[in-house]
Length: 134
Image (cartoon, rainbow, N blue to C red):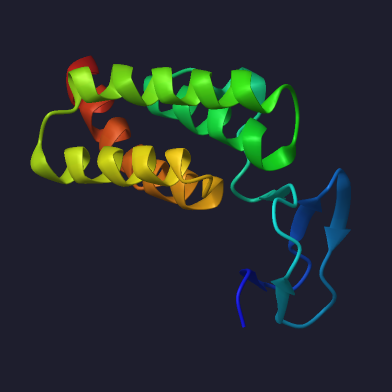
């Protein structure tokens, strides 16, 4: 079986092709068989006003591809630009690995994998910004 598999917690919400779907009272597993469906876990979503840091802006650009909002080519270009900007700053081996994974996934049309790789960088960015502020 191929396709995207979503494991949902009770009451978890997901956006599928513009429709918000809420899981019931039990954990469940959905297999999305339609290729290129626009799917975004709402727990992963970053609101536009929350895209205030470089990694969050890259995540937001990628989530626009997942949700189907906006022109796909423009969103992909913007996400690639944001990842390139991050690669100029995050030079440690672990960050470079995540950025490479994100870029490959984006170029292969695997937008969820791209977002997943970028999300790994969020705690690292938080630590760097906290250290800088102190």
